[in-house]
Length: 113
Image (tube, rainbow, N blue to C red; front, side, top):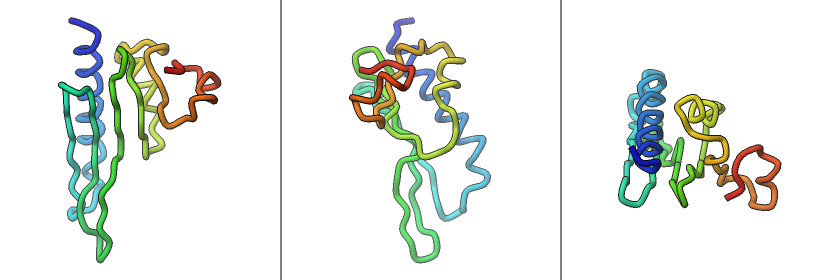
């Protein structure tokens, strides 16, 4: 299995597992949607819906695969996702924390780009 397909499968598995584990606690008016774009290597878990009179739309997670590395662009949880990615077989140097400023990424312990 090539590296890109492996990383796509790991991300999709993570999003499906996270959604299954946590969606039972969600408001019934807030739906979740997993967006999978294998062609462009972009993957998201979104929340969409209404809570009282407030419209909710936003990412829970967003991942991209760029230059054979997984870029975590968004993590709106307290979950240690990178640990789960590494347990699933992703090398530490193949994870970029995209939400950290480029000049500070070398302090993260993960890839800088």
